[in-house]
Length: 229
Image (cartoon, rainbow, N blue to C red; front, side, top):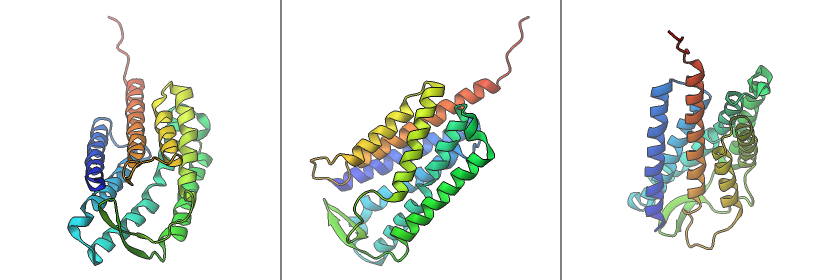
């Protein structure tokens, strides 16, 4: 069952990636906001590898594909810190537009990457795992509690969601963050490891919707007002 769910999530993320590409084509590249695209691409890969594990079979190929999942997660997920900082600036928070604020955002991104690599990726030792019909390679004894990197990213996203709601009257960023946090904190009585990925999917959809709204507001502000004849 989980194999089907992971395949569905991979398809769903591919659709989100297409949505993001349309926004880039329509409004042009906005480097900080467009970091969503590599994050979503990594999630297409992540869910695709999990869905295809049984078809690939146990061995070095599947192990290598799963190692890449851990590296992509460590390097790309913290990019959401940069997206959040940019969203606050685009919402009109003056402090977020200052050079020191961007330096802090970049420092947080780099710190989150280093902590994740040092604590969970470097020296990684994976073993085959069969769970709910999915074959993958995973750490035998994962660390208890959420990783520091996830806590940092979640805190910055929550701050940005509050600012965007306050400044632009846009609650959906906050809805996505709250659902993601609740889904990770509350254990679900289901025989599935894939169902909780729905909360992550909703978060990324809410971030893309936020980007779309801010792109439209920026385009509207930049449009010249026609003078009366």
